[in-house]
Length: 192
Image 1 (tube, rainbow, N blue to C red):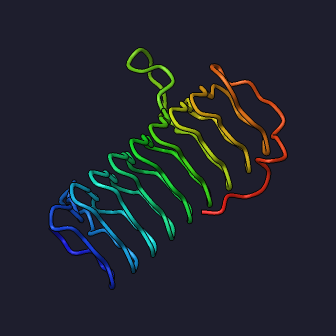
Image 2 (image 1 turned 60 degrees about the vertical axis):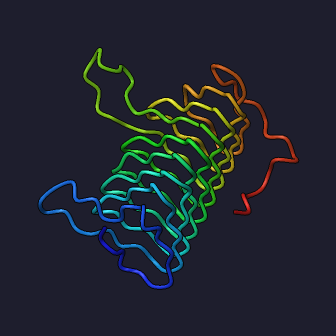
């Protein structure tokens, strides 16, 4: 195990911090006050801010940038080349594919799945994950298809299947997701 470049941290001895995926990869940079639990694997060429926390068995692949005060839940996978803002909470079993962008103060519920391949194996397609703008909430078991943008302050209901862009401040419900006005009770930013 390679020690992260950080102070005041708790790294379980059964975690791997600094998985060298290439001969010229660089050790990850992790800010202060990190808690990295057993079974977690963090690849080289990852940059993480202060106040980072993982559940057990999280995976964070190379060329990922993560802001401050981020939670990556148990068995969550971030497949690399991804940007995640600050004050983000990715709950248990979330899947974040390559080329995804997540803004600040975003909540992603348990077992939500993002995709980045429009035609898996059948056709060549440049991998493009979804973009979640600031203050987005995604409910449990929601699925977001490649290249969709979820606008600022939007709310994706549990189990929704997002097939096209969601305008800012919108509620997305159903499969495929229909867009509805955001109820007054769901308006405002996320307090994460």
